[in-house]
Amino acid sequence: MSAEVPEAASAEEQKVSAQDAGPAQDAGPAQGREMEDKVTSPEKAEEAKLKARYPHLGQKPGGSDFLRKRLQKGQKYFDSGDYNMAKAKMKNKQLPTAAPDKTEVTGDHIPTPQDLPQRKPSLVASKLAG
Amino acid sequence: MAGAGGGGCPAGGNDFQWCFSQVKGAIDEDVAEADIISTVEFNYSGDLLATGDKGGRVVIFQREQENKSRPHSRGEYNVYSTFQSHEPEFDYLKSLEIEEKINKIRWLPQQNAAHFLLSTNDKTIKLWKISERDKRAEGYNLKDEDGRLRDPFRITALRVPILKPMDLMVEASPRRIFANAHTYHINSISVNSDHETYLSADDLRINLWHLEITDRSFNIVDIKPANMEELTEVITAAEFHPHQCNVFVYSSSKGTIRLCDMRSSALCDRHSKFFEEPEDPSSRSFFSEIISSISDVKFSHSGRYMMSRDYLSVKVWDLNMESRPLETHQVHEYLRSKLCSLYENDCIFDKFECCWNGSDSAIMTGSYNNFFRMFDRDTRRDVTLEASRESSKPRASLKPRKVCTGGKRKKDEISVDSLDFNKKILHTAWHPADSVIAVAATNNLYIFQDKIN
Image 1: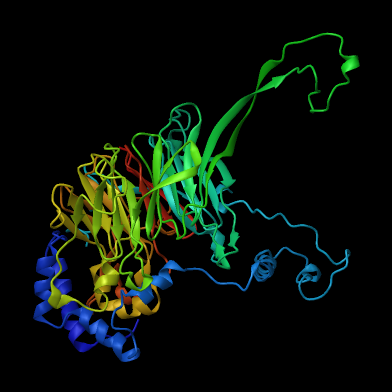
Image 2: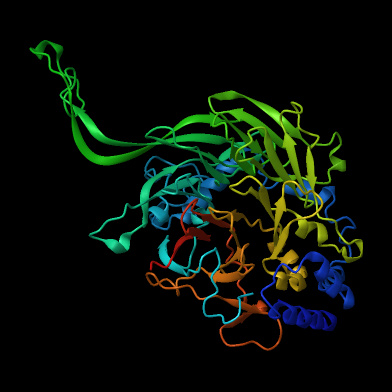
């Protein structure tokens, strides 16, 4: 975490004392905002920090670009062949018990029956059930 | 955060202490992505506890019956069944991977000896039947005990097969597969109180299903704009009312909750009630909308209230009051001055869940550094607890934790900058009746109970 901007630090201290004041955590948003308006709001200080680092950050953060990226999460592959190759490579990495000379056989050269590894079990039991 | 004294700040009604009960999962530092727990859910009686993980697996734990010879195993949860619910798929049309991660598990109310649950990943919902088998038929006429067919000419007498006891076997079988109804990623499923239908919600649409019918579902909410450039908000969570089978709510990325009544129209694009807390425009910042996004919404057991979780707080709403929440509980307000870093490391988009206790007198939600927070609505007290291996001695009381934000750090406090943001508690569950909670900390499942007197 980066160092604090001076204004934000004093706002933090104000917040700490308010928290220690008593068990009433749900002081209510109105009261919280009153405090923030008295000094530079920590949120606005954070926003200034972000804008300083990324000056070209869009005006509408919740706008459609941001949301559309959210709608399409996940890695895009060229096609199903690309996807299956990537999965095979990942499986080889995730199962360290695989014999070292039998990994990475398919995909890099034309395999012969002797080269192909024994079929590994594709389902590994959850460790919660262990 | 903790109440005065710090020795024991009880939360959850009646004066009791939370104690460690069990922890499930591997201890090793190297956590495989597949082992990360993605959902936790008790069934209606609390006797079964289901977890789903990123590897598409479901593990169900069952509570042990009280046993006089082993009093300390009272109420312990042990593995009952485990199965692979979903597997990774490839969406050929979009060239995208469909993750096998279990987003949600919801139990059906028990109607016979078998247990049923719905589990969903991003695209497909499955109804699983979990049944016990403790008897086996022996003495078939046409086949041997090992299953080989007997030569019919050798059979000289008829016999009636008899049932013999066998070791308990728990079988899980998929009974229904509800597929191809969601273009976007499913975030919620919710079983209706009519026990016949359920809803599934993705980013832009909500569908209504009948549990018996897999080739059709009704679309009841559609917020997709004609022009995607005009998209301003997405659906983040949805849930049916616990008693009124015509009512459901859905929350949005803009911090609003809409309550819909299926009696008013077939398509519930127009809400019946609209819950939003008015915002002070002068305090608006770049982060305002992002941190107002609601990650979870849950009705109280009574059906009179509902709770919403946004990035920094939990709000309790009275269904009869749309203008503002009844209560607002700060989860980790000290993060407000860290929003820039949390945006850069994507933590600001973490989706925390929340839950009620059985009597609706307390609520719980997770935070970072394996901390989780409990708020007692009656006493107005709250407590921060930690799920860690260090405080994992049997029946050891959990010590309240405190985060210090200023420069002067007291002993036993932890400073905001020392918090581990990779240790997130996103999923927690509360037993429907007893003081038992399940907390998922990455790949470990912690179970805590109240101190036995």
